[in-house]
Amino acid sequence: MNFLISGQHINPIYLAVTGFLIGIFGGFFGVGGSFLAGPALYAVGVPMNFVVGTDLAHIVGKSIVAAKKHRTLGNVDIKLGMVMVLGTIMGVETGAQGIEYFKRQANVNLVVGSVLTIVLVSISAFIFWEVWRTSEMQSRRKKKRKKEDESAFDHVPKAVWRIKLPPMIELPVSDIKKLSLWVIMFVSFIGGIFSGFLGGGAGYIRMPMLVYILGVPTHVAVGTDLFEVVISAGYGTVSHALKGNVDIMIALVMHTGAAIGAQIGALLTERFSGPRIRLAFAPLPLLGAALLVYNLFTRGELK
Image 1 (cartoon, rainbow, N blue to C red):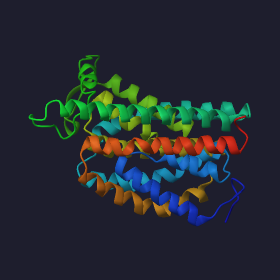
Image 2: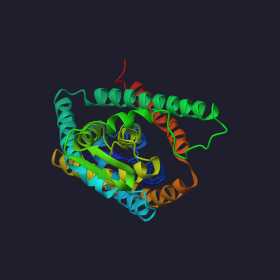
Image 3: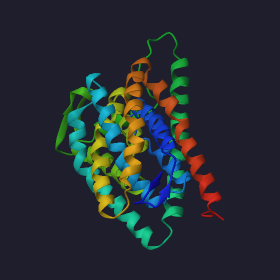
Image 4: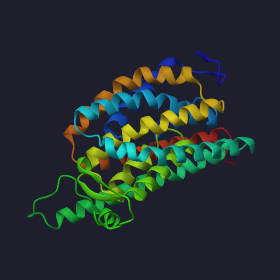
């Protein structure tokens, strides 16, 4: 099938199956799936600027489906998601401007591919380490009752909660009594930069930040991040479309599979505890990084 906007010829079955798998992962882990969607599109020849913009467009529809399902399961903190909107939009535009800069330098594939690879490997290594530490901590006190969503980094959000920079916000759905607005803005701004520069909703960075920095329970972080992905990816899609970086037909074909997969993934979260969800997520960024490195080498970007 020919996609005229990006000038690519891609098998639509490949795109639909890729979208289905990304939908399952996104619904289960609360991420847009760009850690797989980006490498998958780049692998079939899509230029990196179109990878970023098109990935954002396809993720919007999938995330709406998954977020709606998580909402019915009580896993979405709407108040937190709405507070994060401004920081997210500012971050997305900052990242999108970065893409434009490297397009003008004619090295967007190498820069974005390299940065995304480093980010994915770092996130995967950190989550593996954190879950291992959590397991070790639990094994040392077997006789005590284990928390379903315990983390070895529980001390970090407790320290963040002690930041009393007004205005302070109460988030009952996330079991947070008081949290500074500026901390939330910081987390959403960083997530937005990753979304605008590397594509997708940046759930691979925002979901861990919600858990490890803000102290949001994993199941609520998954659902809330999907809600936030709708906003960040929606704004990012418009921004990149105006810059000529979106092939909407590729996005629509991928969404046919993603809409089904997202509902399946959301239902699966009810069967796993927080640490198990994080452990299952950890190897996926490595897969995306491996695909990126392989394609950067085979396409001559890395010499």
